[in-house]
Image 1 (cartoon, rainbow, N blue to C red):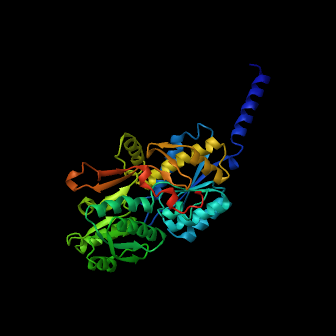
Image 2: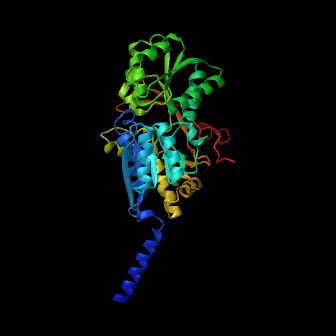
Image 3: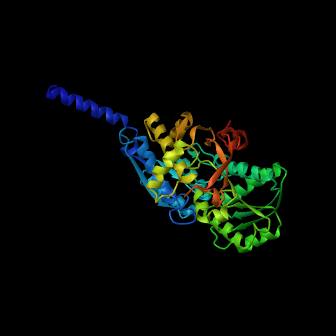
Length: 403
């Protein structure tokens, strides 16, 4: 090939590459992982979610496809005003295209509205309020991993049907706790149970004693824990000191993560019923992903929130590649809804019009110590809740996007 023809060919390649990335703002796809890095929800999200995002970018082969991806990280401290400030800084100044994870529903709801205002993308993996795909839905937000309705539907239904007919709620006093209490109470009543009382505790709360005493005095068969992370761990540990389970009452952990069970230990957590969308030991694909994750995360297996971040980032990159653009945000989300989802975390699924990602959910029981074969072998599968039953019907959510 002559030098002249070689230069022309090189110029054509450069023009093709420039065209392919012409719609990528600044030539870089910027993803912000916004979560709790050091507090109540750090173990279940935190640095593990950041690792999951990096693994998704690597596994998608972004670099080989000529997609330059940067990941930013920030700690919202579980405070909506802090999370909102970071989101505005990221969208306006740092040119972030998508924010992911968002544990703490009050933060997730605030950032979701900012993403709509700025026409960017918010993907909620660890925030739980079902309002995110209901009355507070937007064209810019996808609710990915689980939500308060699916948790209530799974654990609440199973507990009532196995004799847990009277309930007392111990609820984290903010948007997530309120939504989880509301959705679970509806399930309890629908299945013929009764709610005898409820108490709301500050978020976060190290001392649960006064709230547990009220729950104990109610004589309810089930104490529904409408909280998460360290709050759930504290309630169960302190409840053991009060002899609540020995006295015949039972805890229903309405949002329990693998890391919570790890922290509690099987002696205390055994027999606990819980609903999750992911468990590392479900199948060959989940085991393969989780072992790679654990090798880079001090041996800890991923929580469903962290696994959800991996799944969400994969599908986001798929949509950006198909659209050949990372903006505007509502168009990227529309493409995410158009394309089917498929990954080693949840298998095949889809995103509905209201922004709800669909996949199976699972009801697990925590193993007795004698049943566990080793580290992180904590769950036995009680039942699979099919995707079409696991989440609130689209028509019932009040999302303005659903005609």
